[in-house]
Image 1: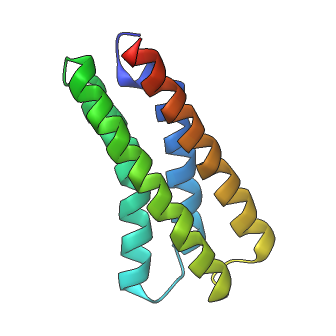
Image 2: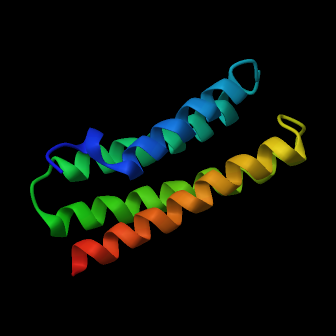
Length: 114
């Protein structure tokens, strides 16, 4: 694995970001929209930044931050459903993707820790 683009967890994060952006594109509460989009982007960017940092120890720290951003997105998806921004099926699908991402990141952390 020579670059972050080769990481499956980065690819998965990119999918999540794109789905969040599409879901929120017409939402008028700009503060809410900005928060969930920023949290989703944080997953992707922390994986990229950590990978290119050069040390496994620092990379693991970035991965924990990415995991925290996953939890934030997952929490906000409940609000999206509650507020009618998306329907239950859309929210459940996205929460499932995010939950899978949390597990994948944790598995990768365990791998890096040896």
